[in-house]
Image (cartoon, rainbow, N blue to C red; front, side, top):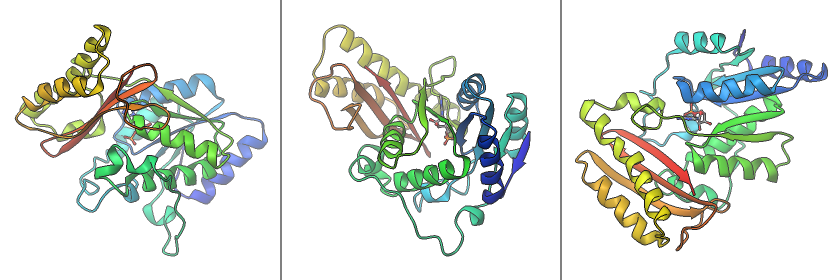
Length: 279
Ligand code: AMP
C-alpha cells in the first residue's frame, strides 16, 4: 500500500495506472474509519483493479463554529485498516497541498446545496463539491463510492458529476448501522452514555415513518409530526430538520410515494447526526 501526500504525485501515479488500463475505484473519506467506510472500500476492492482511498479532513466543508478542530484523526489506525482491507493507494494530503494560498476556484450547485443540511450549514456543500471535484481530477477514478447515510451529498455529487462531465460512475451503498440501529458515524464518539441512548431516536423515528407508510399513511406532514413527537421525547435531542423530499430534486413532497427520501438532522448534545431512508 502506497501512502501519498502530494496531489501532483497522486495524480501522476493514477494517470500511469490508467494508461496501463487499470480500473480505479475511489473512496473519499475524512478518516476515523468505521465499518461504513470499510463497506465502501470492500465494494471498490471487488469491482476494480486498484483501490484508492483519500483521508482528508476538509476544512472548507466545516462552518466557523463546527467541529473541525476536534474531528477525530486516528491516522495510524486508519492506515492499518486501509492496509488490512486491501487498499492500494492512500491519498492523505496536507491542507496547504490542496488549498495553496492563491486558491480561488469553487464548485457550487445552485438550489440543491441550500436545502436540508444546507439550510443550517450554508457553506458545507460548496466545500464538499469543490473537494470532490478536485479529488476526481487528481485520482481520475472509473468508479467512486459514497454512502447513502449522507443522502443529500449523494444527490449533489451525482448532479455535479453529470453537469461537469466527470467520466466516473457514482455508486451509492447502503448505510451501515450499529447493532441497535444507530447509523455508524465518525461523530458518534462525541456522544456520552445517555446521549448515545437518546441518539437511537433517529433510527426509531425513521422506522416509525416506514411503519406508518406501510400501514397506508401517505401524508408527509402527519408522518413528520409523529417522528417529531418521538424525537422530542429525548432530552438531549434538538431537531435541525425532518423532511420528506423527492429523491431527484430534494424538494418537499406532500404525499410520500415512491422515490421519496425521508431525511433528518438532529443535534444530540454537541454531535450533529444525520440519517435517512429511501421509500
Ligand atoms: P466521511 O468520512 O464521513 O466523509 O464519509 C466518507 C464516506 O463514507 C461518505 O460517502 C459517507 O456517506 C460514507 N459513510 C459514512 N458513514 C457511513 C455508514 N454508516 N454507512 C455507509 N457509508 C457511510
